[in-house]
Figure 1 (spheres, rainbow, N blue to C red):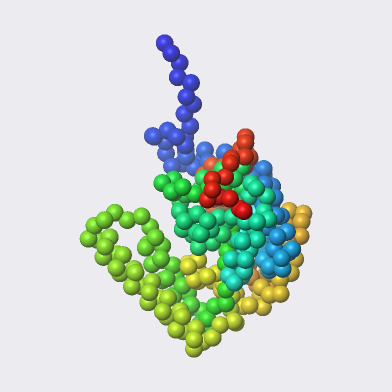
Figure 2: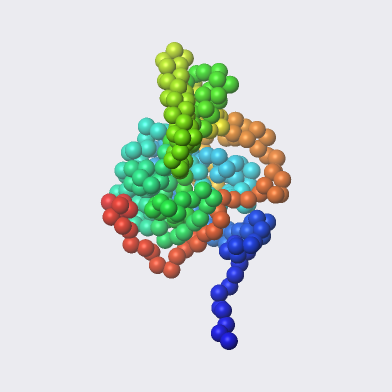
Length: 299
């Protein structure tokens, strides 16, 4: 009788439980996590080199900054790198990066790949592969390992609660409008309602800024501000330096205040069941560098 050589895994078996799938994901990622982290540092090093050569301020952000302060490098279970640029520098950075980055690094934006809807920039290594929760395989966009680059800008000087309410309202409406919808009366009503809500929040934001002014606070562009967090501008500028994985990179002027704005008591480790990264599966090094499609040429 012929033997079936297909190996079933908890991740692929149709009757596997969520716990089995989660255990498979953890076992796979933990076995190769350090290799992934070092490959991400290689991307960060190239991005930092470009920014410093062309006088574009950048700084480590979010879990990457937290890892630098608390661990001297990656949070042990982290599998991505986050940095920020001023929104006013994003277009210039993207243009320079497309010209000067090595061929295997691809600048992914909504302009270079319209199927990637997030209003951020990712520098991806095309000689790798990563799958995360939320990846849409019905859309054709590069899925190599990456460094996230978030655009930041001055925020209106609203009160903190009003800022959070408007930012969260806008982002919720925006997320629903960009989700995949099946045509029905209900979905049409939702699109109409959340379209109006997004417009209302955007109008409040812009009109309020005319009266309250901008410059005291800095944060993500409105489209990325679902948590409503913001920083005093002097918390970020002028940027300083911090050690990350044995190398020096740019950081906010006051990393402690910056991290408290984001996480509160950031030195407290999360419960063990929350110590996980974003990846479902990754291959930090493919056998052969894939040739870029015309849409994925940096030059």
